Length: 183
Image (cartoon, rainbow, N blue to C red; front, side, top):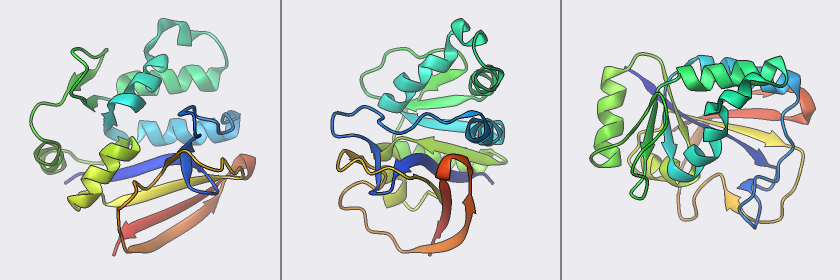
């Protein structure tokens, strides 16, 4: 059975994007980027909300074969990972991705039953929907040492959870990974 894991970079004050919707967090440098490359390679399937999927389409581009090796490696890992995109507005998606048909909860439950390994989830609204359905098995909060002062929160407003700590890890660039499971 698969495990659904919600993980995102965030500011110390809990935001994954700034007040204008832009991701105003520091860009991962090589060591931290490699950590995320390794995480992507461990992901059997990636569940994406529309906004996150559109932002991540950057990595689908053949142009990503230029630049630093760590970036090229992430682009390959992203392209190799199957993606399921939840959207009511998109009509088509890129390579190795499909639009979800059916309701989110049913799709996620079926996916958990038929997948071995980690199922990543990206996007705060999608994660909130899955959390309300008790489908998230682990939360990974990558805390960056910046304060955005507002914006899009990691945890959706109105979502109430009791969590059990699983551990912490200090990463490069002052990032601290906090891991939690539902209590």
